[in-house]
Image 1 (tube, one colour):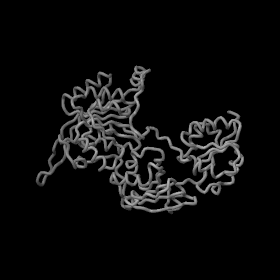
Image 2 (cartoon, rainbow, N blue to C red):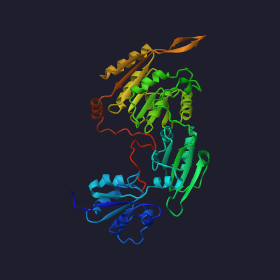
Image 3 (cartoon, helix red, strand yellow):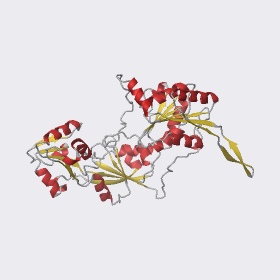
Image 4 (tube, rainbow, N blue to C red):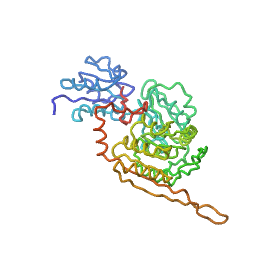
Length: 446
């Protein structure tokens, strides 16, 4: 263990020194170096030691803290509870938990619920502070009470507009500004009024509560009838049947943070249900037909999923610029099945799943040949479904087209060999703007 003295991370509110406990005040008093956001440092004009402002990237500042803490007492100021979407976790990761003491204050979220009188033991917490809002509406589909940490780009007004755009208007909202500070203000809105509000300060917490007491979350497993995607029917009239979707999506083994490709998306039915299962991830819906692209976009908005990116283009060429997937579904190939399977297996992450739906004998043979050429022994299911339909006073069965479902896992060994083969070349960079794959918290401290 090193001989350096402990770094203390002190939580502080917008009321400055008044929010400090005696223990926190003592930590500041004995500090020789004071670190924090500029607004936090301004609370201590009498401090005579070195001050380090946290602005821009934190890495350089924490390197400086690491070096100084070997000989001096360092105190870092952070908003509210430093371990709640704050800088505390980064400090612990950088310096080691044995060298860091955390002294929390009330978080802004605690103040927000206290000021509105809403119990928060059943609330969910979402941060779009310094992050892309992509997937915000999808994440809220299953939630009834949410506290949201915002920023200037992802303001309460813009988030309200995003929910309205994706058909989720059933919320009551409270915007809580400058909590415990001199300019504290708490206001209630419906989403339409909030979306047009233009005088909200940058330091705020947004609380959202379902307005319909009869609201219930959607089913854990999506199982939508084709009619849900048939407001505009694709030219070829084909929408993946829900029984096929259920088995295909289950075979993809989608995790909550997965990146998914849906090749030949058509109406977007698979993309939309996959997106519901990965609210922290993204789905790329690749479709070559211009009319299909527009239908897919309409359905994405209708079903309130904002983590689907519709990509207009023909596979496999349209796949080149996408980030590497965790799961790939191929529902249409336009005669390029072998090429699509090859690219999908090349780009899949280790342990990723490839699922192919094949109706024609030609596609069945081509898919099986492409998978076997890679040394894979795919799971193959021939699915034949008959549905009961009315016939006068009776019920008869009506058969759907039988379909082959191929599923395969990319082995880790193949992934390692692919990495070795491309060593020394320029790595492919994911193209999504503002949507990092990492879910690491962005500090609220600065």
